[in-house]
Length: 243
Image (cartoon, rainbow, N blue to C red; front, side):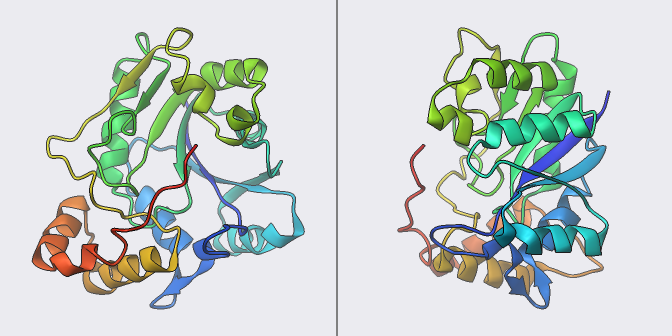
Protein backbone atom coordinates (compact mmCIF):
# COMPACT_ATOMS: atom_id res chain seq x y z
CA UNK A 1 0.00 0.00 0.00
CA UNK A 2 1.51 3.27 -1.16
CA UNK A 3 1.06 6.41 0.97
CA UNK A 4 1.63 9.60 -1.00
CA UNK A 5 1.78 13.11 0.42
CA UNK A 6 0.33 15.37 -2.25
CA UNK A 7 1.06 19.06 -1.70
CA UNK A 8 -1.07 21.47 -3.71
CA UNK A 9 1.00 24.45 -4.77
CA UNK A 10 0.61 27.51 -6.96
CA UNK A 11 2.15 30.94 -7.22
CA UNK A 12 -1.09 32.91 -7.46
CA UNK A 13 -1.95 33.51 -3.81
CA UNK A 14 -4.27 36.51 -3.59
CA UNK A 15 -2.87 37.83 -0.30
CA UNK A 16 0.83 36.99 -0.74
CA UNK A 17 1.70 36.09 -4.35
CA UNK A 18 4.62 33.70 -4.77
CA UNK A 19 4.69 32.99 -1.05
CA UNK A 20 5.84 29.38 -1.26
CA UNK A 21 9.07 30.33 -3.03
CA UNK A 22 9.82 33.24 -0.68
CA UNK A 23 13.09 32.63 1.11
CA UNK A 24 14.19 32.64 4.73
CA UNK A 25 17.96 32.45 5.22
CA UNK A 26 18.46 31.46 1.58
CA UNK A 27 15.95 28.60 1.49
CA UNK A 28 12.39 28.68 0.14
CA UNK A 29 9.40 27.97 2.36
CA UNK A 30 8.49 25.02 0.14
CA UNK A 31 11.96 23.57 0.60
CA UNK A 32 11.64 23.80 4.38
CA UNK A 33 8.28 22.05 4.20
CA UNK A 34 9.49 19.19 2.00
CA UNK A 35 12.56 18.72 4.19
CA UNK A 36 10.28 18.34 7.20
CA UNK A 37 7.78 15.99 5.54
CA UNK A 38 10.65 13.73 4.54
CA UNK A 39 11.12 13.08 8.28
CA UNK A 40 7.66 11.47 8.44
CA UNK A 41 8.04 7.70 8.55
CA UNK A 42 4.58 6.96 7.18
CA UNK A 43 5.10 8.78 3.85
CA UNK A 44 6.32 6.77 0.86
CA UNK A 45 6.42 9.61 -1.68
CA UNK A 46 6.05 13.39 -1.78
CA UNK A 47 4.41 14.90 -4.86
CA UNK A 48 3.81 18.55 -5.71
CA UNK A 49 0.46 19.06 -7.46
CA UNK A 50 0.66 22.34 -9.32
CA UNK A 51 -1.12 23.76 -12.37
CA UNK A 52 -0.60 24.04 -16.11
CA UNK A 53 -0.55 27.85 -15.90
CA UNK A 54 2.60 29.56 -17.12
CA UNK A 55 2.82 31.54 -13.90
CA UNK A 56 3.36 28.27 -12.00
CA UNK A 57 6.39 27.29 -14.10
CA UNK A 58 8.75 28.40 -11.27
CA UNK A 59 7.26 25.59 -9.14
CA UNK A 60 7.94 23.07 -11.91
CA UNK A 61 11.49 24.42 -12.24
CA UNK A 62 11.95 24.12 -8.47
CA UNK A 63 10.77 20.49 -8.51
CA UNK A 64 13.06 19.60 -11.40
CA UNK A 65 16.04 21.28 -9.72
CA UNK A 66 15.41 19.51 -6.41
CA UNK A 67 14.42 16.13 -7.89
CA UNK A 68 10.89 16.27 -6.47
CA UNK A 69 7.98 14.48 -8.15
CA UNK A 70 5.30 16.77 -9.54
CA UNK A 71 2.10 16.85 -11.57
CA UNK A 72 0.44 19.70 -13.45
CA UNK A 73 -3.35 19.87 -13.60
CA UNK A 74 -6.32 22.22 -13.47
CA UNK A 75 -5.97 25.48 -11.57
CA UNK A 76 -9.59 25.76 -10.39
CA UNK A 77 -10.68 22.10 -10.29
CA UNK A 78 -8.22 21.07 -7.61
CA UNK A 79 -10.21 17.90 -6.89
CA UNK A 80 -9.53 16.64 -10.43
CA UNK A 81 -5.87 17.67 -10.03
CA UNK A 82 -5.61 15.45 -6.96
CA UNK A 83 -7.32 12.47 -8.59
CA UNK A 84 -5.04 12.71 -11.62
CA UNK A 85 -1.95 13.09 -9.43
CA UNK A 86 -2.88 10.10 -7.27
CA UNK A 87 -3.58 7.99 -10.36
CA UNK A 88 -0.35 9.06 -12.09
CA UNK A 89 1.73 7.99 -9.08
CA UNK A 90 -0.40 4.93 -8.10
CA UNK A 91 -1.24 6.21 -4.62
CA UNK A 92 -3.48 4.03 -2.45
CA UNK A 93 -3.62 6.46 0.47
CA UNK A 94 -3.43 10.22 -0.01
CA UNK A 95 -2.12 12.67 2.57
CA UNK A 96 -3.36 16.10 1.58
CA UNK A 97 -1.07 18.94 2.57
CA UNK A 98 -1.02 22.56 1.45
CA UNK A 99 2.12 24.44 0.52
CA UNK A 100 1.57 27.22 3.07
CA UNK A 101 2.71 25.07 6.02
CA UNK A 102 6.52 25.37 5.99
CA UNK A 103 7.10 24.27 9.58
CA UNK A 104 4.65 21.37 9.67
CA UNK A 105 5.69 18.76 12.24
CA UNK A 106 6.37 15.28 10.78
CA UNK A 107 5.27 13.76 14.10
CA UNK A 108 1.85 15.35 13.64
CA UNK A 109 1.72 13.96 10.10
CA UNK A 110 2.70 10.51 11.34
CA UNK A 111 0.11 10.63 14.11
CA UNK A 112 -2.71 11.35 11.65
CA UNK A 113 -1.52 8.96 8.93
CA UNK A 114 -0.78 6.25 11.48
CA UNK A 115 -4.28 6.47 12.87
CA UNK A 116 -5.78 6.15 9.40
CA UNK A 117 -3.63 3.15 8.52
CA UNK A 118 -4.53 1.40 11.77
CA UNK A 119 -8.27 2.02 11.26
CA UNK A 120 -8.74 2.13 7.49
CA UNK A 121 -11.41 -0.58 7.65
CA UNK A 122 -13.47 1.84 9.77
CA UNK A 123 -12.79 5.25 8.18
CA UNK A 124 -12.55 6.81 4.72
CA UNK A 125 -11.13 10.11 5.96
CA UNK A 126 -9.07 11.08 9.01
CA UNK A 127 -8.05 14.66 9.74
CA UNK A 128 -6.71 16.88 12.51
CA UNK A 129 -8.79 19.83 11.25
CA UNK A 130 -12.35 18.66 12.02
CA UNK A 131 -12.12 20.07 15.53
CA UNK A 132 -9.16 22.41 15.71
CA UNK A 133 -6.73 21.73 18.53
CA UNK A 134 -3.54 21.93 16.47
CA UNK A 135 -2.31 25.29 15.19
CA UNK A 136 -3.08 26.24 11.61
CA UNK A 137 -0.02 25.16 9.73
CA UNK A 138 -0.15 21.57 11.04
CA UNK A 139 -3.16 20.60 8.88
CA UNK A 140 -3.07 16.96 7.79
CA UNK A 141 -5.86 15.12 5.98
CA UNK A 142 -5.65 11.42 5.09
CA UNK A 143 -8.04 9.47 2.87
CA UNK A 144 -8.19 6.52 0.53
CA UNK A 145 -7.92 6.79 -3.23
CA UNK A 146 -11.36 5.22 -3.39
CA UNK A 147 -12.86 8.05 -1.29
CA UNK A 148 -11.10 10.66 -3.42
CA UNK A 149 -12.34 9.07 -6.63
CA UNK A 150 -15.88 8.88 -5.29
CA UNK A 151 -15.80 12.57 -4.33
CA UNK A 152 -14.53 13.36 -7.83
CA UNK A 153 -17.39 11.45 -9.42
CA UNK A 154 -20.12 12.94 -7.22
CA UNK A 155 -19.07 16.52 -6.41
CA UNK A 156 -20.68 19.19 -8.61
CA UNK A 157 -20.52 22.40 -6.55
CA UNK A 158 -17.72 24.80 -7.43
CA UNK A 159 -16.71 24.85 -3.76
CA UNK A 160 -16.33 21.08 -3.74
CA UNK A 161 -14.21 21.10 -6.90
CA UNK A 162 -11.93 23.89 -5.67
CA UNK A 163 -11.48 22.51 -2.15
CA UNK A 164 -10.31 18.91 -2.46
CA UNK A 165 -11.87 17.38 0.64
CA UNK A 166 -14.89 19.65 1.16
CA UNK A 167 -17.30 17.16 -0.40
CA UNK A 168 -16.00 14.40 1.87
CA UNK A 169 -16.12 16.14 5.24
CA UNK A 170 -19.42 17.92 4.55
CA UNK A 171 -21.09 14.60 3.76
CA UNK A 172 -20.62 12.47 6.89
CA UNK A 173 -23.59 10.38 5.84
CA UNK A 174 -21.70 9.28 2.72
CA UNK A 175 -18.15 9.00 4.10
CA UNK A 176 -16.84 7.57 7.35
CA UNK A 177 -15.02 10.46 9.03
CA UNK A 178 -12.78 10.64 12.08
CA UNK A 179 -11.04 13.57 13.75
CA UNK A 180 -7.68 13.61 15.53
CA UNK A 181 -7.22 15.98 18.46
CA UNK A 182 -4.15 17.18 20.31
CA UNK A 183 -3.92 16.71 24.07
CA UNK A 184 -3.44 20.49 24.42
CA UNK A 185 -5.46 23.07 22.54
CA UNK A 186 -3.05 25.15 20.47
CA UNK A 187 -5.62 26.24 17.90
CA UNK A 188 -5.07 29.92 18.74
CA UNK A 189 -1.60 29.80 17.20
CA UNK A 190 -1.30 30.57 13.48
CA UNK A 191 1.70 28.87 11.85
CA UNK A 192 0.59 29.01 8.23
CA UNK A 193 1.70 31.56 5.63
CA UNK A 194 -0.97 33.52 3.78
CA UNK A 195 0.02 37.14 4.49
CA UNK A 196 3.11 39.28 5.09
CA UNK A 197 2.42 39.09 8.84
CA UNK A 198 2.37 35.29 8.68
CA UNK A 199 5.64 35.32 6.77
CA UNK A 200 7.19 37.62 9.37
CA UNK A 201 6.29 35.25 12.21
CA UNK A 202 7.44 32.11 10.39
CA UNK A 203 10.71 33.86 9.49
CA UNK A 204 11.34 34.63 13.16
CA UNK A 205 10.63 31.01 14.15
CA UNK A 206 12.85 29.51 11.45
CA UNK A 207 15.64 31.98 12.15
CA UNK A 208 15.58 31.05 15.84
CA UNK A 209 15.01 27.28 15.66
CA UNK A 210 16.31 25.99 12.34
CA UNK A 211 19.64 24.21 12.27
CA UNK A 212 20.92 21.64 9.75
CA UNK A 213 22.19 19.59 12.69
CA UNK A 214 19.17 19.73 15.00
CA UNK A 215 15.52 19.21 14.06
CA UNK A 216 12.72 21.16 15.75
CA UNK A 217 9.16 20.06 16.44
CA UNK A 218 5.83 21.65 17.33
CA UNK A 219 6.66 21.49 21.03
CA UNK A 220 9.78 23.59 20.38
CA UNK A 221 7.73 26.15 18.45
CA UNK A 222 5.15 26.39 21.23
CA UNK A 223 7.89 26.81 23.85
CA UNK A 224 9.42 29.60 21.75
CA UNK A 225 6.08 31.40 21.36
CA UNK A 226 5.41 31.09 25.08
CA UNK A 227 8.81 32.64 25.70
CA UNK A 228 8.02 35.45 23.23
CA UNK A 229 4.24 35.96 23.54
CA UNK A 230 4.49 39.22 21.59
CA UNK A 231 5.41 37.23 18.47
CA UNK A 232 1.96 35.66 18.29
CA UNK A 233 0.46 39.14 18.10
CA UNK A 234 2.14 39.69 14.73
CA UNK A 235 -0.52 37.69 12.89
CA UNK A 236 -3.18 37.21 15.58
CA UNK A 237 -5.56 39.52 13.73
CA UNK A 238 -5.42 37.58 10.45
CA UNK A 239 -8.67 35.83 9.60
CA UNK A 240 -8.59 32.58 7.67
CA UNK A 241 -10.37 32.76 4.33
CA UNK A 242 -13.78 31.10 4.48
CA UNK A 243 -14.59 27.97 2.53
